[in-house]
Each structure stands twice: as C-alpha cells, then as structure tokens.
Length: 309
Image (cartoon, rainbow, N blue to C red; front, top):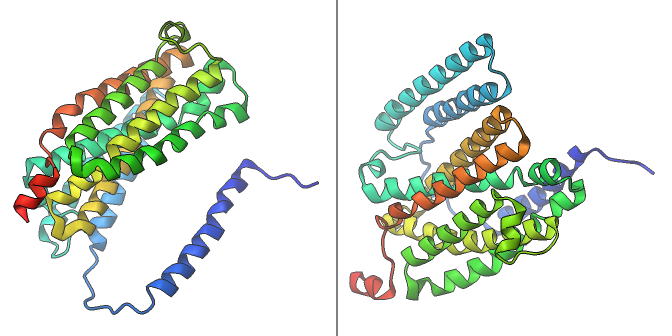
C-alpha cells in the first residue's frame, strides 16, 4: 500500500483547475474582445517585489534576532519601501494602473480597504495557525486540529446567504458592525484560558470548545464580508471589476501581514500559549477598532438606492 506525503494534498487543485479552464472555454468562448486593455506589468512587478521583500524581512526577523539577520532584515525592508515608492510613481503615470490613484483620494475607499486589510490580517493570522494552536497548546491530534476548522467554513455559508438576502433591508453598516463584534469576541475568547470558556457556558472538551468558538467566528465572517463587498462596489459601481480586484488585493496583503505578525509573536514569546494569547488578543482588538471605519462607507439601504436611481 503506497503512502503519500502531506504535500500531495495540493494536487487536489489540479482537477479543479482543469474543470474551470474547460468551463471558461465553453461558457466564455463566444464572447467578443471589444478592446485590448494595456496591462500594467510594471506596476504589478513593483507591487509583487514590495510584498516579497516585506515578507522576507518580517520572516527573517521572526526566525533570528542576531546582528546579521537584523541588518539583512532592514535591508529587505528598505528595498520593500523603495519598491513601494516606485510602485506609486508607476501607478500615477500608467494609463491603466492596477491601483487607480483616484480611489485613494476618497475617505470611503481608504476606510473600505483598511477594513479589508485588517479583517484579512485577522482571519489569516488566526485561522492559518489554529492547527498549531490546538496541537502545541492543548496537545490535540493532527486530525482533531484540522477538523476544528470545519465549523467555521460551514457557518460562513448560511450566514453569507442570509446576510446577502437581508442587505436590502439592513443596509451595509449594520451587518458589518455586527460581524466585526462577533469576530472580535470569538478571537478574544480564543486568547483566554479554557476556565473562562467554562465560566460563560462552554463546558465541552477542548476540541469541541475551539470548534464552537470558530463556528461563531464563521458566523461573524459570513455576516460582515458580503456587506463589505457590496459597500466597496457601491463606491464606484461603474468600475465594479476593478474595485473587486483591489478589495481582494488588500485582503490578501493583510493576510500575509497577519501571518508574519503571528509568526514573529510566536517566535519572541517564551511559550506557545503566551504567544497565541498575545496574537489573538491583538487581532481581536484590531477587529474591534476597525468598527469606526464602517461608518465612512455607504449605508446601502433600499430606500437610498431607490432615491438615487
């Protein structure tokens, strides 16, 4: 009987990718190309370099605090900031930039992507480390540490569907605030001692308790994310595709920074339990402090849409 390495799990993307390519060819094969837009290769390359050297510097800082590593870290960060400066210059000059500078002149757009970056950092910085948290702090098995993530994904689906259908009544801000509160409470709870879990009524085993907290986290994500996506699009509906792409970019950049932050905290902490507590409390408070940015976004109620239309 052959055995496979854990790396083999990534091959699951191959058949999915092939199916998607076939569907694109069949469903979009008849579409006409009306214009061929210029691709901002320079801007994309500079932004990729910015994130790459930023991640290299932060990861090196997380691995070692020796003099040589600190010098190399500052060198990587200096390169990253220099590329970021060149990226902004490139975007101002390019006729079809990947990040339109006119977006950055509006407070709602900045608020929206502050929200996207912090929530991306929080979710990736938390969920990417949950299996390690479960095994290193509570001694759960590898299988159990992976399975505790499932309730979060399962809870996001119905929460997203219900929120999407309710947006015309609630608007965008209420679901975003409610989602942030639920997410913040869930993350802060993860950073507490299990004794507090039992004090508020979570009296299951460790694996069940973590799974239940992550279920609430999934409800919060499913409540906030559809509303935030629609609020971003409403800022400039005529450029919905661009807005969606920029939103995704900020979410993933935030996720990369969140993972680096958690890695640094864990490396500098005396014990994994202390490191995770610091990380979870930091992300929980960060999500909570994001709430004021929500009130700079469109309300999105049905009566407002009717009056503007």
